[in-house]
Length: 453
Image (cartoon, rainbow, N blue to C red; front, side, top):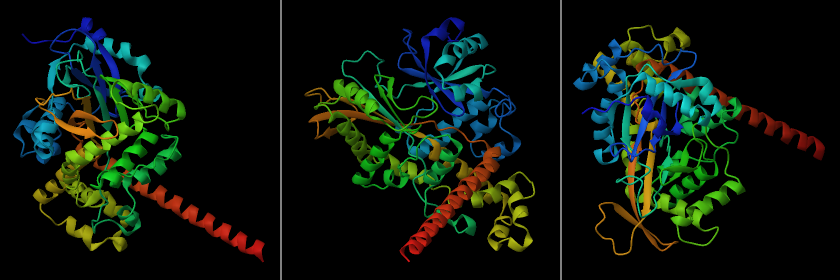
């Protein structure tokens, strides 16, 4: 018998967090089929401009883009297409062991409206102002709660999980990159974007996190990356204890980790990590770093990210050929600045253009996804566990662990122009900041010389 979520079920689902396009709810009820599950709900903008006007099915050009995957093209529902994208594209690339495509469950409009009312007070104000639950959907996505081990919440051993957004782990080397954007070859996108976010008030403090450390394969550099994320979590680092969040921002990011926050987190670790006060947090961060290093999952993720081998500077030209529109980038450059490199991109076959953009969008999903790692102390003598395990020397404990990739969303083709414009804005602002700093240094040096003379 098919389950249909109705108004009476709404009270059992509690707010867990959200991103730009989806809300995540956890289950607190007693229905066995839902225990140990989370629900993903689509969002619709309050002003109705960004998602509401998007078609329910793939566009003509998107069907062309994904033509090699019949299931995705055949569906008339965009939400189902997104789920099939995870199942048929991302799961084979990242490994089915680490990817859960979930299942769709029918939901009534009354259920979605009730959920919206129940959770609105728990959502960050900035998120509430921007979007709400999309009550026009007729189903929701149900997935395993990867912040827990299977068999629900009633476990003897506590479970602690960390959700990490590792971001893009390499520097682009494409020859297509415009000379004015050459800084992209030496400074990570994450670090440059921090400057713009700080200027726009999206973050309150610059993060020292460098994705190149996380993807380096070096245990010391990975440990540094984890410490930097813990110091300034923003929306890139969250920790859950038995499925409930104990550290990091919910939907709007978190400021830098102060003394009080560190103390509360240290206390919360007592039931999981052995050690004296002040030592448990260090042990936990070490546990995370060693697991990232030993598991090797970021090597898989990096391979998928590197499907973007032309950068947006190159992929945008292929996009305009796919949608049969004049290339606005070439038009902006003008004939005298038009590079032979760009002209050559406009002379390739349609299939080649499709591959460039398809690979770029798959890579964009990989650059934007999250990694969920869950741990539980291994009982003495328990050698029959199906999970990988790691010995943490600092606490003298063995831990079972499991790793999953989450937030593997299908990117819309029409966002290519947005990606290009944002990239241009990020680089322009970063270059401007560097120029300002250099002028200030020069002026300071000049003043120092005048004072000395």
